[in-house]
Image 1 (cartoon, rainbow, N blue to C red):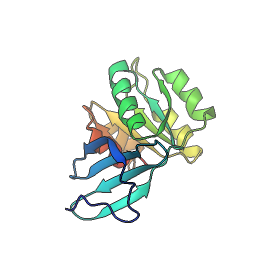
Image 2: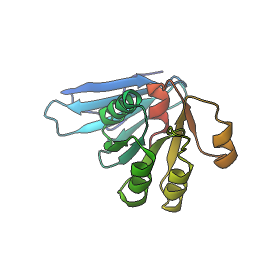
Image 3: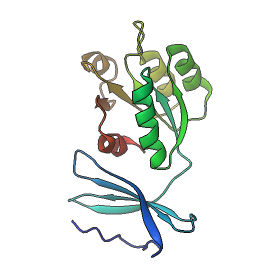
Image 4: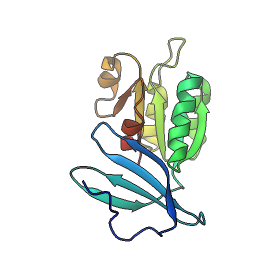
Length: 167
């Protein structure tokens, strides 16, 4: 695998802001020019290399009842230039956010405590045409029964796997 970028070349005064290796050995590299004006995201894998313009307009809703996990996800998602909506820690706030907030993508902890799940939140997002991924520390059987085709990230969350699933 070559670490040389595809065309167009980043300015020579660029530097790496963040990076992660996913479970598929995909390297996610974020570059910024020294002047701060140009940002690029690079995804390099053993199979193919692509270079895409960095998109700082994508809004990601984070629903997670554990503040430490939410903070970790927020940091990773923000480091790669996405805008954060939330994080939201409880069912009612998450349902309200899924219904009215401007979001492009969502990360949903399936089990939100007190016997509540993110299933109703996911249904609202699906009705709005907003893609989402579930996160869980438990058995995904309940998720698969309701949302067979929805990706699931198992906790503890791997930064690379999270980045692989972001739009």
